[in-house]
Image (tube, rainbow, N blue to C red; front, side):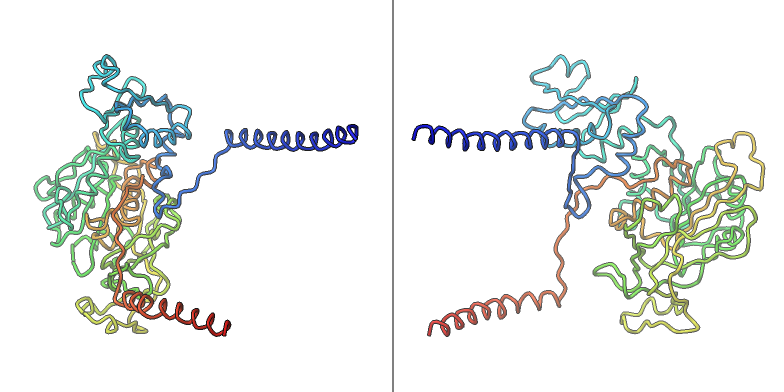
Length: 462
């Protein structure tokens, strides 16, 4: 009997030991693999907890080490450290450390930091200070340190254009802020009738929704600038004759006298004159926009006209196949959605070009001092300016598309990307139909299910 028991104990004991060793081995292998390979899942609608392509691109292209010294109380470090760990994960050149000013006052004095929440970004022998803990602020700080030169952007004024200092819904102060964050120098509105020329330091010119026509002399100034290899961004709304249209035709860009209607894809809460699209042509500006929607409140369509030798002319943004070009301009003021219908023969079916891009050879030799301009002119044209206004620039991919177009004009291809996301207040908006169904589901359907289930149970027991 003792032999039998000892044999049985040895048998089952060895099996148990082997099982424990196997389990420990599996755990060790899993632990080893998890230290080498990581899988993260971000279930937020806009990927708020995943680094943006812009941030990853910057981290992958660091030529020198980046060191972030963050001055925070110990209790306030956790959330920011989670973000810094993601940066360090994507680049071995990125390092960070926290300093509590109360515990290390000498270190705080060395960096001349007198408040909590300041981060000092060191890059080579340069440094940048930020007072926010967002990815956007940190990435822009690193980008500013990496940039060798600030490029100059001028907004054209004098024709009731959207102003870069206007903070109303119709203003472009949001675009100005994005340009500044991209390390660009935004200059005050340029009145061509006064300056008589485009300044020599201008890297890109923005014409943002003029409401009054340009003078012939101003058109000549724009023409000379483009012929010298300049870069211009035109946002020209429908129903307005700006006088720029004939100039653009010389560059194979034809602006139609219409507006785009799309009843199948519209912004929630908007009408048929605000088409939404996810269709883009293949171009460096839109390479990063696959699946990202943009929308255009009351936009015109355009087309390629004529032939421009040596130029690359293409569409940039396209409406959906269900859209059409409405030539009955009086329909803009129609309040009834059903009153606007596609008319065969008069209206053009989609997809329609909502934006165009042209790169063509300069036809006038650059003068001395104009070396900042390129050998080839660059032009981007959108049939709408409202999509980049303060009201809409932060919605969907509108701001990213504008900035990527601007960076292409500025020949800053490394900055063409999708920028860091920011948290947004996203209220649940219900239309009358939604409210109707929710009301009756709570009032009728749910109580009925309980009553029917009770009756069935009672019937079976009976």
